Each structure stands twice: as structure tokens, then as C-alpha cells.
Length: 115
Image (tube, rainbow, N blue to C red):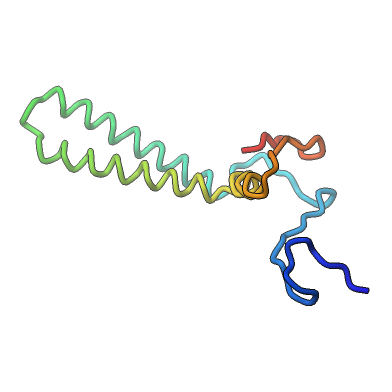
């Protein structure tokens, strides 16, 4: 008799659950591509904030540049948040919360902090 996933509607359908064998997962000390993009955008955000602070001290001299930098700052913050939500560890945590369980650090996963 076929086994059925608890999230599967009928036998024979695919539920879409991704099962991971933690014994065969390779760990690396590098940041993932999404984390690298977040780091780049954080540097860009800091640059915009520095520009805003510098131009604010100048008064009305750089009003157009100041307005553009503030718009750019908001855009970069939104992009960082979107990237943060795409990180695999955040997706796993959100899936656990959606199921009504709390994601706790697994002793078999070094470096996993639930986020």
C-alpha cells in the first residue's frame, strides 16, 4: 500500500514537500548569493544615508539630490527586505510557523539559529 503525505490531497498526487537528508548536506563558511546581495545593498544604503546627512547640512543647496537620495533609500530598504524574505532559512522558519509549530534550532544542523 502506498504511503501518503499528510499534506497530500489524494494518493498519487505530489504534495511539493522538499525532504532534506541532513547527513548529505554540505556546509560552507561563505555567504549564499542572496546574503551577498543583501550585503551589497546594505553598503549602498549606508552610502545613501551618508549622502543624505551630508546634503542635509548644506541646507537648500542640494534639495533635488536630497529628495532623490531619500527615494532611493526607501527603494533599497524594500529590496533588502524582499531579499531577506527569500533567504532559505527564513523560508523554512515561515513554513514552520505556518504549520503552527515553532522552528527550533536543530542539534544536527551546525549554525542553524532558526532564522
